Image 1 (cartoon, rainbow, N blue to C red):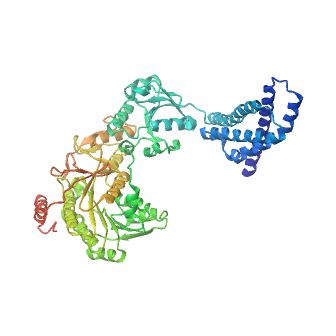
Image 2 (image 1 turned 60 degrees about the horizontal axis):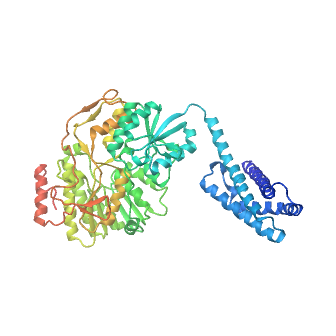
Image 3 (image 1 turned 90 degrees about the vertical axis):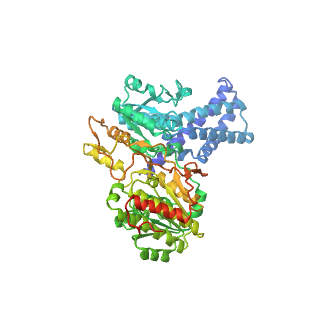
Amino acid sequence: MVNLNGKIKQLGLVLIDAALILTALALGVYLRFDWNVPAMWMSRLENMLVPAVLINLASYYLFGFYRRVWRYASLDELMLIVVSVTVGLGGTYLYSLYAGILPRSSYIIAWFLLLFFIGGSRISVRLLDTYLSKLKTGGEKKKALLVGAGEAGVLVARELKRHGHALKLQLVGFIDDDPSKQKRIIQGLPVLGGRDDLPGLVRQKEIDEVIIAMPSAPYSTLQKLVGLCGELGVKIKTVPGIFEILQGQVSLKALKDVDIEDLLRRLPVQQDLEAISAYLATQTVLVTGAGGSIGSELCRQIIRMKPEKLIMLDHDENGIFYIEQELVRQKNGVEVLPLVRDIQYRETLAQVMEDHRPDVVFHAAAYKHVPLMEMNAEEAVRNNVEGSKNIIDLSARYGVKKFVFVSTDKAVNPSSVMGATKRAVEIYLQKKARSCDSCIYCAVRFGNVLGSKGSVVLLFREQIAKGGPVTVTHPDMQRYFMTIPEAVQLVIQAGALGKGGEIFVLDMGEPVKITDLARDMIILSGLKPEEDIKIEFTGLRPGEKLNEELFSDRENFALTRHERIFIAPDTDRDEVEVEEELESLRQRFGLEADQFRT
């Protein structure tokens, strides 16, 4: 039935087009002779009408006129109309050379008329559809301001103009700080002012919502916008996955309230896909800690590089189960092997290496909770240090080509047991890199990741949902933040850069005060800090620092060919220096003499 209706509509369009072709050609001749057509030319016109209709309709058919959905007509469709009409009338003219030519000027007049007739008929379909859609949706529309009149803002504005009625949104104009855009018209909308003008414009224009389209804006800028909108009592929204805006992938159906992850995103990571594919494609890749936040995202991104086999290893059976269930539906020929193993058991780990002979290892398995590891120092050492030594040593023994260790900014001048264990592994890995020629070892440091298990963001969400209070350890505490996909992209990229012994450091942007993070999350929940939700300061916990560092004082960072990755080149220590630093870590955290052994 649906197919029959579609054919009837197509037949209707064909008949309309036939009538328009006849009208345009006849008018072309009549206008040429000021409505006084000589008998000779009238006879030729009558003989040309049927062939002209058939030739022009054939042109429209070949160019796909009757497969188009004209309710979504755009500039591409208008260009198609110009080409089709030109080809159709060109064919008509060539036919007339044999059948009796009409005055050349009549073809030119007919060309303009057909552009108007055919183009107008198609545009009218779209206008009618838009009008009917508005009638269907009805109701009062919310007024919205778009912050950012750059490429991303223009794309969002274009989509809102087309489909904003479905969201009951009326776009009033742009806000942009660029002086060259002030008082200009973009997409038919005025640039009303800069961010400083936002409060006045919200009151003057009775704005209900503010939409952010600033994918490269720093956290501090977005934070001010969030705070300002919270004070003004207007909603603030963005398009999820704002990275995709720059590629034109805008879906207004997914327009949503701003989340804290949206504020902390930066421009997309530019990956050297050729280099990454060279060391991952068709290889056997092992990921330890594959059930965790970082490990599972590593698996998601690695499988896209088409390795021959992906081995996912973790002692958390639930984590491994869920990531295996997710990936098995999209493995695309990649063998996915979930293994429940503990890296502390060297013999069990050796059997895995013997059976599968991985080419590349990403070592993400670790205990990461700082206060908890202060209470369980020996277990932290057994898992983080001894377990890491197991996988590092076995990788050399079983022919691993590249080994990437996922470290942390807490390893820099460590104040916690967890940080000390990560630093100990960095030292051991660099020592191994100097003595092993067959395997390239490197480490990657980065700060906190949003959405990871144990993240402060998840804690704050739970506390806000319960009505507060939101607990922050110290008003001056600040941390580096990055989204999980962004961090993992850079970890994989760093693995491609590794030549042996490097400690790669990821560009984390500017540190964020935890108090500001808490305030932003309360505002984004539609509440007011201190009025609706209290913020309480509980004091620093054991092992915590106010500020994390990405480099130690004695590390002189070096640049890489990737603008977001640096190197802390700390690979020139001899055996005595290695032992001295490990001994200092043992004494500092009161650990047993046989711990941190190399």
